[in-house]
Image 1 (cartoon, rainbow, N blue to C red):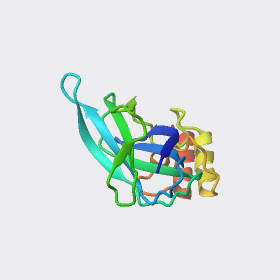
Image 2 (cartoon, rainbow, N blue to C red):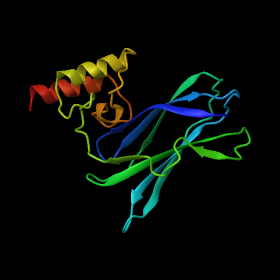
Image 3 (spheres, helix red, strand yellow):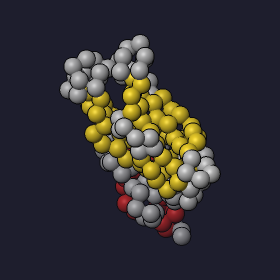
Image 4 (cartoon, one colour):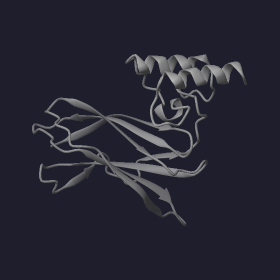
Length: 174
């Protein structure tokens, strides 16, 4: 199995949450039956890095030539701190060998910056376009910049029409 990372995006949410989204393509000639796993690293003293967390995805069947979308979320990040994602996949059904998408460690460096609650489209402000982004999400018109963690304004673990109403209230009553 040979997998290629064709697109990736890091979306910082509110309250120490971050989502890593990637699109992968099976460029080999064998079906992939495995999920993916992503390590989150944080710097320690000097130039060392330490594992902060690891997240696995459920197994996915990806036929040769097909692509799949993968999204994982982590919590507990601190504003202003440096972090890095390191995505892997297994090469065999028996999960005997894991492979990095890139040859180097800590491939996706970023500085965590908390997104304002309600900033569903990630433009660092809460305005009517965020309420529209939530409504688009609810009707199945998901955009690449949609930030579900920030769109969950009432922090109940789901994005609903109530969140769009709260965004409108935030705009009308600054």
